[in-house]
Amino acid sequence: MLEQNSISLDELNSFKKDEYLLIDIREDDAYQHGCIDGAIHVEKETLLKGTVDLPKDKKLILYCMKGLISGEVAKTLREQGFDAYDLPEGYAGWVVWMMKKEKEQGESCRADEIEKSIRKKFHKVLFSRFAKAVNQYEMIQEGDKIAVCISGGKDSMVMAKLFQELKRHNKFPFELEFLVMDPGYSPTNREVIEDNAKKMGIPVTIFESPIFDAVFEIENSPCYLCARMRRGYLYSKAKELGCNKIALGHHYDDVIETVLMGMLYSGQIQTMMPKLHSTNFEGMELIRPMYLIREDDIKHWRDYNHLHFIQCACRFTDNCSINPDEKTDSRTGSKRVEIKNLIREMKKGNPYVEGNIFKSIENVNLDTVIGYKQKGERHSFLDEYR
Image 1 (cartoon, rainbow, N blue to C red):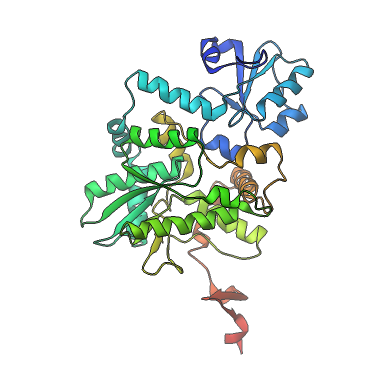
Image 2: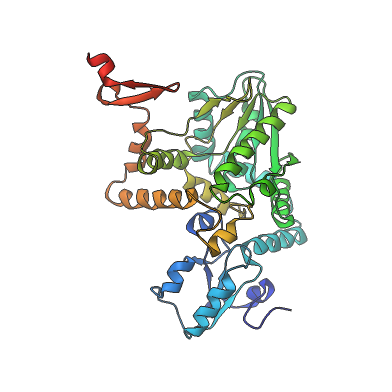
């Protein structure tokens, strides 16, 4: 039985569009990974400041990821005179609800139409750029067995489909293993990943690891430790399956954001490399075949195919939304959002700013660099100047 000030998904579906305003109060990064159809985005902090012009003649229906914070925010708005409600199932509950509706309508597998969209509508912006990165950076060789690492988000899922398409056109033999690691997902999150894989025709291999339990009590930078542990478990499982490479779904926007994050927050010039040899797993290599693909094109593909993904299946996600200072030290996620916003602002005055940032990492002029590091050894312009 729902509380009087909460609205169920079935009730929401029964309302007329002009009766309510649906508001996603999650952080921008989560919203960009997917939202409930028809929702507008106003982050919790902005909403509580009262700087947004909200209608008082409509129901305001608020949701977060899992309903942990939307109830309190809706209560605050009611105290301000708004007809506000919360959606206790949250975005995660809505995704599961949509999955069940698709199954009832016989749409549990839509691989053919999704693949057709990659071959036709999104061939230039997705597949062509994927193939270009693979060729330009020499990511795949004959006889490779690649573990395509799937987290369940939009980036890794489209990467899996692009690999399948590439294999249909490959000029030499290579093998693929679609690998999903469950580091301690909730049943809902795992169900979403499995359902999307089935819907998209991706034959995933799922294995479990104790990562979430291991990092849960870590006070400082649990996300950093979690990422390192994930990488280690992925390498280990991939090697066990006979793979010599793992593929991750980082894209063009991740690359340029990493450049600015290194400069502004770490005091160094560095980037996310298109491929790397593993230092801890001999004979293993990491590749990033989405290196030239824009995030906006991935979102367009997702929305065109009516696909719904969960940004982060981590148990910290909602906790951090409630208490921003808990469980994090460096707040890497927030820093990346800040960089996204910075690039967005710069682009207003210079539409080429993103391309220029990307080109800068390919056009480093060592004659004008005071110092640099290579293989752990520091070098100075004075070495040659003398």
